[in-house]
Length: 237
Image (cartoon, rainbow, N blue to C red; front, side):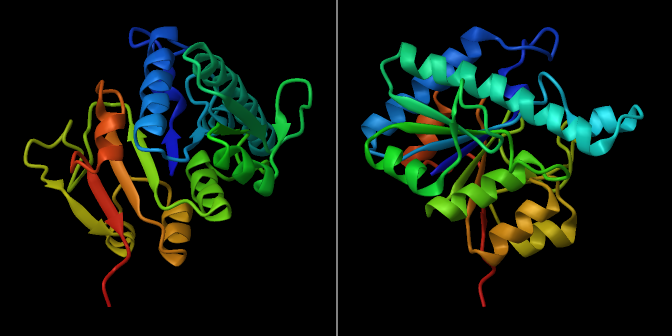
């Protein structure tokens, strides 16, 4: 499985910025417990929006590619924080980055990542794809395909517990969707992951489970198969 976490999921709830150590510790503890209980091989892809978001920099006049590289470095900070939290609960883990920085992490090598997973280690993928103009959602899709993951677990952080017909925070008539195809997500313009990531998952028949990662216990529930979020699946022929 590939667990996709946005950087904002790690942020201080008061400011929406930085790293809240208690949140990171809870996510690490729950993920490690799920890996042990369900004997699951788990990789994690982290975002960096709690520190710096490339698109935000670009809208303020920065060069888009340079801003994206700064965002990639922000994901490395989050990955190292999560790695430290895993080690604190006795869970072996490794950080692999798409941008080489040998002093702090391994370079991303698919076969090495798979080997770590086979040995029971959790692998945290950082620095996105290593290329500007691609989101960490696309990174999650790409890494899931490369390591042969069965699904992507997309953890939301805003209290929204799945995919709705509209933003439930703005529209009281929004209806929760328990199941939807990749194609319908694209056709309806639903904000699940960016369109590049959704298209990649559709082409590679990668299911996505969208759930609220900020609710304690939900990581275990999603691994247990409880229908707590929304399943995005291949369209039936």
